[in-house]
Amino acid sequence: MTLSVVIIAQDEERTIGRVLDAVKPIADEMILVDSGSSDGTREIATEHGAHVTHQDWLGYAAQKNFALGLAKGDWVLSLDADEVLTPELVEEIAALLKDASAKDFLGYRIPRALYIGDVRVAHGGFYPDAQLRLIQKGAGLFNDRLVHEAIHIDGPVGMLRAEMHHYAYKNVQQFEDAMEKYARLSAREFVLQGRSGWRAHPVNEIFHPIWTFFYRYLLRGGCLDGALGFKLATIYSDYVRRKIRYFREELRTVA
Image 1: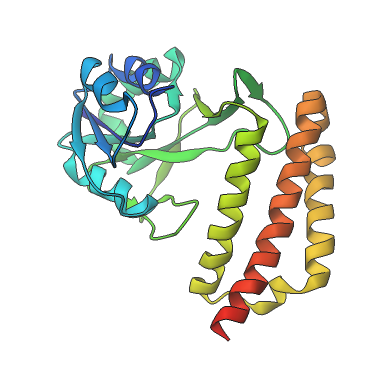
Image 2 (image 1 turned 90 degrees about the vertical axis):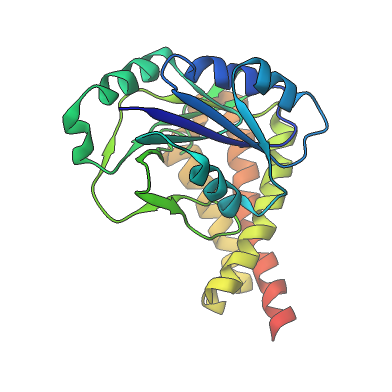
């Protein structure tokens, strides 16, 4: 069975070479959909054997679905431009592609480990963060969401054992900036979904972040990641607070 790897990217020269090098041993084709990079992303991808095509930004889900539509393989692996497969995961996928029983599942989830710079975040609810990314061609599409899009499949889904590494942020400040963006997008998504206004209550804005910090730092072991674990738990609890506040602001604009 053949494998297509599809990636969407814009200004990802920091990681795209590693992403493509890692997946090259199992990929029958590598497709990168670029939405207008101003750095060396396109050139690096081409040098590493990817077919590069341009598509103006359509939104997270629509852009990834556009990339899925370009794939020709029996199986499709959809990656972000900062997700690097481990050698163990490459071996596991290679074995799966040779196994006829693999088609008992329409797709497979892959454990994902977050890195801040070169530091692995092992606790605090950030692992295993399993993502459905390996699917039979045509078995599913990303759901239409502004943020936190995911592939939807009507059928059985399996789980791989080996992991991929997510080099999403160069430093903690980048993580904090991303949480601000995601808070605003999530609030807008709540409105589009018609979520109940009780979520935006000021009392919820106080207590939900407190519970989030307690859950991530203590119950999910963020404290085991030292100062980084404390900082990430604090940022994530503030992300929850801002998401609730922005939701309340969004509700006022549509009232």
